[in-house]
Amino acid sequence: MSSTAIESVLSDRVMSMTESATLQMAGMARKMKEQGIDVITLSLGEPDFDTPQHIKDAALKAMEAGHTKYTAVAGNLDLREAICAKLKRENGLDFKPSQIVVSNGAKQDIANLCLAMINPGDEVIILSPYWVSYSDIVKMCGGEAVVLSAGVEEDFKVPASRVEAAISDRTKLIMFSSPCNPTGSVFNEDELKAIAEVVARHENLYIMSDEIYEHINFTGKHISIASFPEVKDRTIVVNGFSKAFAMTGWRLGYMAAPQFIADACVKIQGQMTSGANSIAQKAGVAALNSDLRPTQEMTMAFRRRRDLIISLLKEIPGFKCNFPTGAFYIFPDISAYFGKSDGVTTIHNSDDFSLFLLNQAHVATVGGSAFGDDHCFRISYAASEDQIREAVRRIKEAVSKLK
Image (cartoon, rainbow, N blue to C red; front, side, top):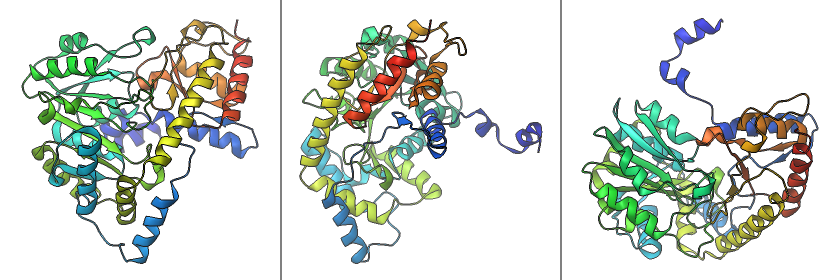
């Protein structure tokens, strides 16, 4: 079937979408491994730790007790109550179970939200660098992504003044993450308050705060923008279990939202997937209601790795790095290598750079263009210290050939 014929069958929506860059790079690395090539994968946002045993035990008990049936579309009540208790206990936020929507991962919550809120022509301000799927989800829903960028010199954090300058009469939503994927940056209280004050001055403007990396935070305290009273009723908090509890494969996320938005998202989810996995939900209750020690130990390991990889990357000429204070990523600016070549490959952009590292160093990373900043590339340090050392050694050796 010709490409023209395929395009005539498929929707404009899918033809305009891009493939997830992180999944694309992971797929390329997987194929190379299948060919016997020793590839170090630093491309996926997945903790390399196993789900804590007490969470797995809760899932086994749930199966044995017969919790294997359809669940409520919004999520089982016991999990939504546990989420409300967590939000109150850890974040000082008051939500009712009816305001919680449990989904098949936080990504579905974001898609539900955009489908519920965005009409064709509506503008969504996205603070960049951003997680790869934000802009494509907005576009899929007919919205226009207004990308506001901040570079490494600003710790990749867009100031409130720039946010206010970008707001128009078509702006409906602001999307950002803190701690941030891909930069590891964390907005502090003053920075969040300034953004909240801007939003408060614009009626019918809402915030989506992606807090999936909340617990992988090296600042000592996570602050949600929903904790500011002036925007509490206009903030949708998105979170989940994948990162804090190493539960990526369990596919379990949630949002806490104003009631009418939660109701709309339940309506959409009811027609798309219905309720999330029954067994995973019981495991989620155990995760939220039990000791956070395994999460804290994992975070300490990530902090050690952060310090290690920064010390190693400093030895590579041309790399400019911020000092990430959360998540498990670093986002070096490598624009100093643009225009350089090893005699075979010339580096024009961040995608070229990541492909060069994959082919020459056998290290899988992700180009920054997918995250809204083509000057940078993303390294996930969700890997052992030995793998990090070897990966950076290979990267350093490879880039030394670029002249």
